[in-house]
Length: 306
Image (cartoon, rainbow, N blue to C red; front, side, top):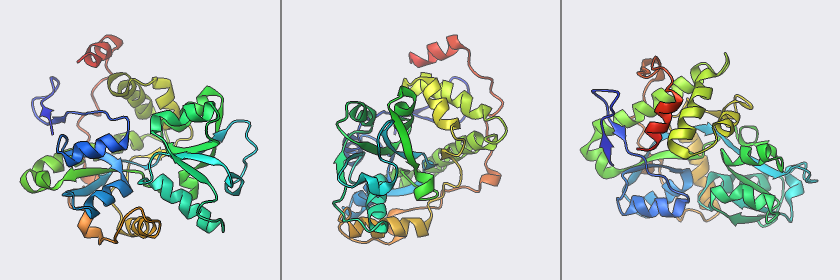
């Protein structure tokens, strides 16, 4: 886990980010300990723990923030209309995959009624635009990209099919948990503070979300800030960043679905793959950066080059 102190603060660790375009390479980097912590799809984290990789889920990345998207002019209006269609999923080890299986079961459909095609998340929108698939289910901002592009529409937000949907989780190597628990606590507290800041004015203008779209889009993801602002505000509850302590009841359901569908080879107890001691009480989480003014365009450009 690479870290350094920022030029803006004389205390506090800034954790060095590394970007991955697919979950397979992220998984291998975590196994090889080229990274010590990452945001990863929940069932994949469970699978790693089941395979003996020393990792634990310590926090959630967000709630909801995924959608099932179909062509803008598609005749698909309901979930059962997807029978016989091709739908892209980010990975068989994703909750999006499990949700599709869950929905097929709830609607009395055979498990193979819909052809699910594993596709790297950045390729989902293009696959729909080229009609290689009839729909896709993935996390943002890939869903909004098709909406803004004018060739896709949201059939369902995950919040409407599986309330408080969990996609990405914070996974930390056990060695770091054992040897540097204070570092893990600092990391989780920072994530919690960021989420609290993003959600605290969500229903009163959402200025924090608009500011985050600019900074994150230009500094970290090389994404159009307008796309990220769309994700964060249309609708405002499209994705949430609080209530991120790993919930045992939901994870038990995910585990049951993963075992039932063969995604995970054996059922594990919650405590075998989750460590919730670092999840803070949000009432006591301070937001150290809330009064920092927005960087200028010149500052953003300079920071983006580092």
